[in-house]
Length: 109
Image 1 (spheres, rainbow, N blue to C red):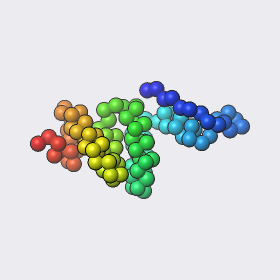
Image 2 (cartoon, helix red, strand yellow):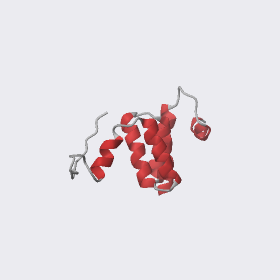
Image 3 (tube, helix red, strand yellow):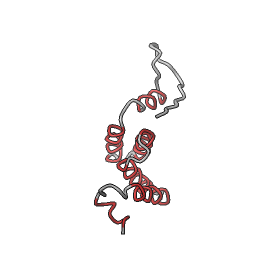
Image 4 (spheres, helix red, strand yellow):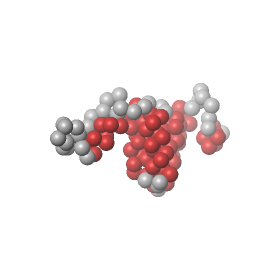
């Protein structure tokens, strides 16, 4: 995984502050923890932040079904139906060899 972060400012101890600190710190967590945080943001209807955490999880694990499913839901809730459709179809294409969550079973008909 490659994380490129534009650092905008430093605190006195040379640690990044502001958005750069947040982005850089996301690179240190496994996809499951990033998706747990994405779920928290979905529950609070903070879809832009949930999308960001899903994308970071997908940066770490490109074919992560949970990340794709959550991202699809976020796109639906945000009104981007075409992108949601694209994401859900990519889930269907990636899940031919694994057990499907019940809400994805419609893809396989």
